[in-house]
Image (cartoon, rainbow, N blue to C red; front, side):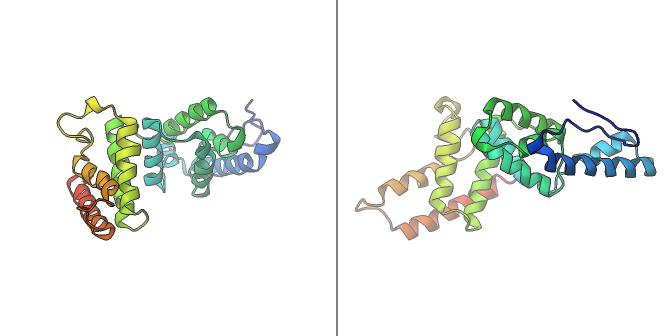
Length: 222
């Protein structure tokens, strides 16, 4: 139940005991913002636009892409939402998710709340193909930056994103061409043959895989 006391500009949700610290912080930030907007005479439309500015939009875009593909683990959502609150990204649904206990999280409720977060923050919901391409680019960038090994990046792109999320009939001619990763698939499977007499060394395959990942990014720039 929401209440609005005399002298306040915003309403506050009922404060369950374990939610009080974060809800209190969220409420008073909103109250200060509402007071500032009232003083400056900012229109409600302009206020809503400023409300959905996202300092770490890249992180949220990745999370939304995982959500679209059905590979986002709901138990990760409280931590993700707490990180968002730390950089002043706010919505009531975000606060509620941030205060959930991952060990006792109701997955259906978490998905419903996250859908509200996406709407509240004005985030674009990509198609499944767009989401897969975004995650593939992010994995390739992580490998080039040294945050993932070439094999781990290829495994994420080929196995976790393509094979798990796309039926084979989505590819038209080559495996992976539905999301533009056909040139990477062979490098991924080459790692399974490193023990064969004709295989190159691990170092050589890593170097070749990195070049393939760079070429993939160059040809799939946003």
